[in-house]
Length: 426
Image (tube, rainbow, N blue to C red):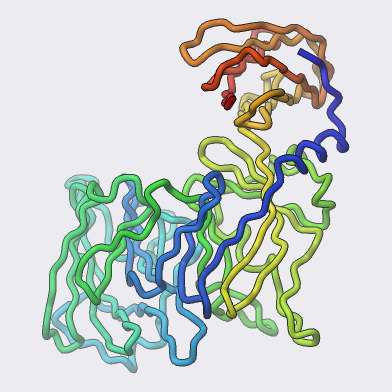
C-alpha cells in the first residue's frame, strides 16, 4: 500500500479518468418521459400518454399524483385535476365552480401529489383525499375531484379507501353515467415508486424500468416568479427518485470542485434540486444556454456518488440533453459527531488494478489508522497501518493477486471502525 497525497490535481486526474457522457431524451416535442439509471447508463422512455394518475406504493404513504407531462405540439393537453370542494359523489360538478381550483403536483416528495393538497398541516393522518383512522387502520376517502382527460372530457373521481394496502377508487362522467370502480394493491407493485393507471384502458400500466432509476427527465408544472406573481409554468427538467440525494454546486470550476465541500448540502427533501434551471433560453441568440460553472452531486441509495455537469440541451427538436458524469465511488458517511472518522470514499469502484481509499479525520484529531481488506465471506486478506492527520487523507491499494469479486475495506481509528465495499473486476 502506498500513501497518497490528496490534492486538487490528484482528484481531478481521477475524475477525468472516470468521466463519461450520457445522453438522455424526452423524444421530439418532449413526447416522452425518461427514467435514468446512472450506473447502467440507460434512459428508459415511456410515452407521456401511457398513464394518467398514479398512487404511492410505499408502506405508510397514500400519495396520489397526476401525469403533468405533455408534449409541445400544438393542441396537446395535459391531464388536469380539479378540487370540487364537495364530498357527494352523486352530485354533478359544475365546471364553472371547479375550474379555479386546479391541483398540481408539488415536486417536493413522492409521498404527496396533487390529490394530497388541502390536507391539514401538522396532522400526519390527513392525506388530503382522505384521513387515516388509527383505530381501524383504514384511510377513508372524503373529497370528490374532477379529472380532465387529454381529449377535454371531464370525469368525476373519488378515492374511497386505502385498506390493507389496497386503494379503492371510482370514476364516472359528471352526470354519474358509466361509473367504474377499481382497486389497486400496493403488493402488486412492490419495488416500484408508484402504481400507474390509465383511464383509457382502465388498467394499471408498467412504467418504471425493472432495474430501477435514479433521475426522471420529464415535463412538469413548476411554480415560477413572473414579474412578482407566482405562476404555474410547464417546464422540462429532472426530478430525483426516492432515496436519491442531490447537492447543487454553482459558480465552481467543474474540473476541481470537490464533493467533500458540498456533502453537507445533500438533500432528498425536494425532488427538484436539479430541476429545470440548469439551462435557459437566450431569446437574443435564439439558443439554449447552459452555465459552465454548475455541477450536481448525486448520491444514490447504495451510497454511490456521481458528479454531473450538463453540457448540451437540444430543445424540442429531439428533446435530448447530454451530461458528463463522474463516478466518485461509494461513500460511507459517519453520522456520529464524536467519531474520529467523518466519511470515506473508495474509487474507482469497480476497479481492475489500483484502488484509492480517501477518508476524512475530524479537525481536532490525528491518529494511527489501520486499513483492513476482507473478502466477501469476511476472511482477512491484508492489513496496512499509517499515520494520518486531521482532514483529508488517502491510501492506494495495489493488489494484482485479488481475483474478481466483492471485498470489504475496514478502517480502524482508535476504537472506532467503519466498513465500505469495493468491487474488483479482472
